[in-house]
Image (cartoon, rainbow, N blue to C red; front, side):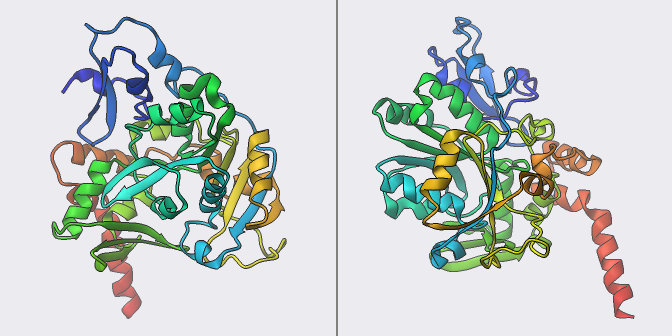
Length: 374
């Protein structure tokens, strides 16, 4: 494996550089943790500079402060209960397709997590649910640009770095492009997820995977309708270190987009930290609540367009930012996280590396349980 894979320290792995290269001399290769980085065939490179123009972290990102903040949930109870947060992504996607547009979002086929193109309402369930892993954008850029050339409205939903890559890739065609970024704390690699799933499922094939059940954080694996594995975030190794911020891509700990200013048309996610005691909501949100932060005029129009399909309440931007650390700063790169990634990169299985990195915490939990029985 080429040494220059790990030298691009802030690389987000979006693969936009590989897609835009006219000489096809950039390939994406996995490092030892499973994260993809670009490798350039210098003999074929003509130094056109398109890769750097498209890279979301080359130079200063184009960001702006949100115009407003809203708390929201889908009016449709079935949609609400089967969505992450309050269902904002689902409602936005449904509206776009009903209006004749197309949606690009993250789907999982078993443990294969990647962005796909959806232009039919019947296919929208593929995009539902949180996927706490880095999705692949391979094969997405060219059809997305073609949709824009054909004059179709395009809704792209992804992490802030993916949104920035799509914006740069689309260039002057972005008038018909609507960008939705998800509040992201960082991403583990697909290799980590696949290895963990194989471990806890006993190697049995998995055709359905879920990380959320409303406000409950649990990993559920199923095959042919049979639940193979279910564990909440405290008991599942993959989930545990994800929520602790230990298994992320190196660049996530220096994320340029973890700040109040955003690079999308609208930012959505969970509305953590909302003060419903001092300022009650006029609707229930027991199974999750979406925050919506329109950043551009297009973002405000999206909120207006879906207002008939969502229960929406205006809130302060400060409340939204204060309730979510990732709207203020990147996740901290701790010693425990560095230890986990070092052990995994040097030959230990993912679950074994997790157990060692959390060994002292597990001992503490056992001690507290013993003391609690007395």
